Length: 231
Image 1 (cartoon, helix red, strand yellow):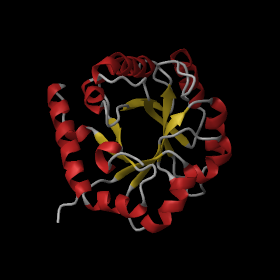
Image 2 (cartoon, one colour):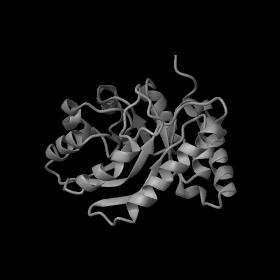
Image 3 (cartoon, one colour):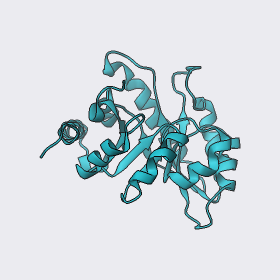
């Protein structure tokens, strides 16, 4: 039986494919991350059974509460929300990717609490492109200095940039922000910094991910279009 969630995933994948074709890109180069904030474990399992393998949470505590019921899944877990440094250790235990590095202090803490297994954490630097006080992320002028300093974190791998730009009713209006994030990544990549790669751009959500793909997103973070509106 095809479930509502499976149906929704199918529609999102169709939209990803169409946006990729418009940009002359391959749909398989776009990683679809299902954002599971407030989504119960059984619905996450439903999405997994429909073929999704990447899941994103905003809060460490919520992820810790759900993960025991999902321990049998071979999934990749992404932390996409702001992280307080005192939650760094459980974050490293729970997640494979961290999308929201926004300070040297947090990077130092994440580096220090690396697990004994030696597994490295894939990290994206979050950029506050709109200068919005309500959002975390570094100002674009501080991205390069943070990337340069982050090369000293031996247990972290800086893999690219992430942004949550301002919301517009017309998704086309966010295009300049996505384009600027891509330009920043290109600028940093030319520096050939140690332990810093700019292969990933995490940008675009349910409302605007097609525009993000057209501007170079390699990861899109989709919640509502998969699980429905949050209560």
